[in-house]
Image (cartoon, rainbow, N blue to C red):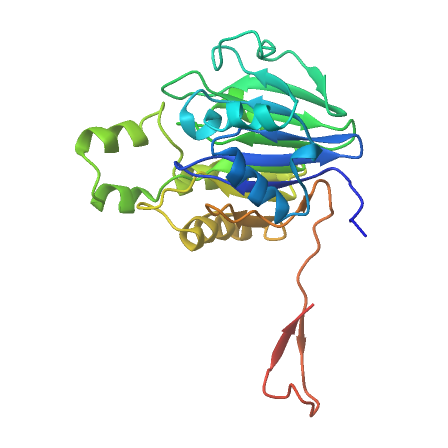
Length: 280
């Protein structure tokens, strides 16, 4: 039997090779960005128990190919509404809501908000009326304007593109390094950690780190940097995970309460006596 739908999402894939996130409520599902072929999107959806028929709309946040390249092939397979942030997609097939103006889609209220990048780029906030998820995956800094839209969301998908030292010592040209690290470039792990600390007091429960560089970062490096900062500030219960290219994240149930990890000492003889600690 298919699992019941709630307000949940999975980042299907995220990185320079393509970006797509599936979000759903009881009323339907949508894709945030479609930056890979329809065939690949379909395969990734299958891994979370969904298919193209579950996609009622596509919302585009950024005009680069790693966010839009699969749109046309997807629309040939599935009739779905298209919503594009201002300046992201030209053409009659897309509705273009104004930044900051909420609109209804797939049973959710959606709002685009501007983020600093070197091309027209927007974050997205989605709410079912009780809970909210916010996504911002291409931006150079998280100023007050961006944080205002992220604050209060139960779950946030946020860029953590690079480790500054790995970028400095990496193979990219000097010009590209400057572009990435600029205020219109991409967030570092440390910048993501700083943003997480500012969001933590406002009900953040799940943080998915996205758009990781294949050359200048790693999931362990990104999660370690951000989770360590949260733990040291007393917010270690916030769940932090990284989106990995080609591997959908487990379902994130928006609003699921944070639960402290408990460690139990095994002091009695048992088949697991060799393991001193279990996690519950």
